[in-house]
Length: 197
Image (cartoon, helix red, strand yellow):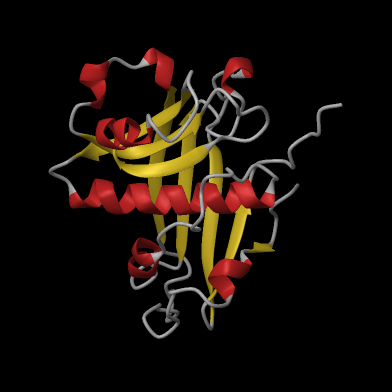
């Protein structure tokens, strides 16, 4: 399976992840789980997105095999910010992790975004408009008290082409483990993108 034993090079070398702040003293069995249920953007009502903080995956009118952009933040505001950057019509996915009053929701959204970008890079689905790999500060904080981070992705596959999408039969997992010396091991259940002929 693609992703088994993958070491994400951007986190292993030259990242802001600091091995000095990550704990490795017996915490390898401690797991932090973040759950993100992705819904189709076209199935959500505007009222569902008011004050919602989460992760979103945009597919614009020019996207065919890769999403246009993966982002996080106050969803309605961020989508409005992107309206002039990308070509209509828009489609995609949103996972609401909380509302604007929750710091935890913002941190978890940053983590899920970074993990999805790592999986997208590994499976040839990296969005052309994402210039940065995602913020790893929240991951650094988790490794102060947990040895393993697991993101459980349910609902729709956020890296799947929306007009071919179906709900996932079972959640997909992204597992991140601190290996020491700043190295992180990323494992996931996605396969390499099939090339269309």
